[in-house]
Image (tube, rainbow, N blue to C red; front, side, top):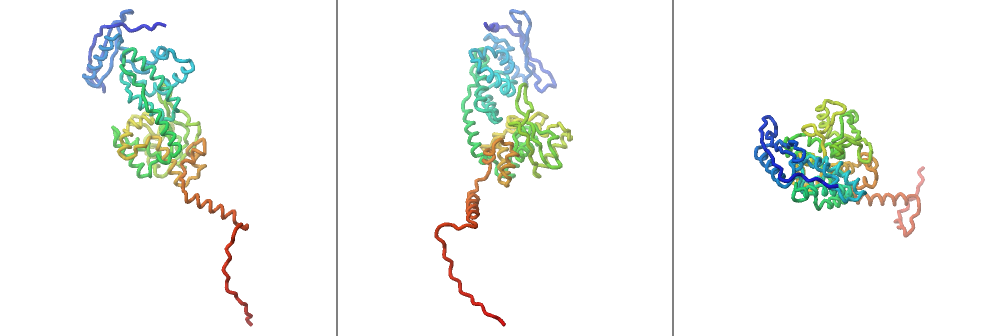
Length: 412
């Protein structure tokens, strides 16, 4: 099928209008006549200052000179991908269409779809890929998602919207090696104690733009319940039992078609988690803040939005804070490792720990147990003593020392 290209050198009329009271008060607008339909078309953008508006107009002029209409040059990624999908995927094997399409709908559009194609940089794609990995996506899932993005951005290069394809990133596979190491020794990724957790929570609050205390509350709640960030985002008032101080973990917030969505927890395993005294005051504070409404979310952003691992990272400048505190390795998911490690060290039995964690395999839970060598040796000695009790042990025996003879005497 022949694809019709936009007209070359379309003439634009431009204007900038100041609209008082708008957070981005400068409206930059271009208008032009479509040479085929003779319809008058327009494209506009609200920008922070006049310089940004002038730069936007200049960008539209350059695009028009290269034969790109302004509506295409200023398109958001979701809009551009939907329009150019068939062209970008040409030559792709049929068996790859489903995973590529799923990656586009479930990950790319919710994460990057709101950005203009020209505003997407290699660093933007890097952060998105690492966010998908942190959310538990497998290597093949991330690979297919990036492959779909590469094809769409390659079409943008051919259209002259961008000069270099920013989706061709490298190094993201190394994160999966880290994930494998994490499975072998998750204890090494945990915070050392309660004081370290409080210091982290406070530093994240102070570094956030609005110093929103809710970020610290969410971090402490996640660590002390050994939860995932998505599960903390999904908790509602009705899930908290303040009589028994237990949390019914039954949902998580994850990216989905059209944005964030609530769904069942990983593996669809519903579980009950204790709420320890150290975090009960902050839970009560959050319950009071939402008026104890049963369906109200307990933890949200400063404007009531849902929290994801990427939102928490960006809003609190997580990467900068953890490096400054000396925890270069620490990610949001390591808050879960922290809680499970602390519970294991507190002597929680492994079968109970497995229920709290929601692990499908006992082997996964056992990785959190402290390898106490002395206790292992004592266990072996206790077993040996138990087996030896009541039977003759083969081998040489120690001859007991002779004791002095005692004589009986009759007392009359």
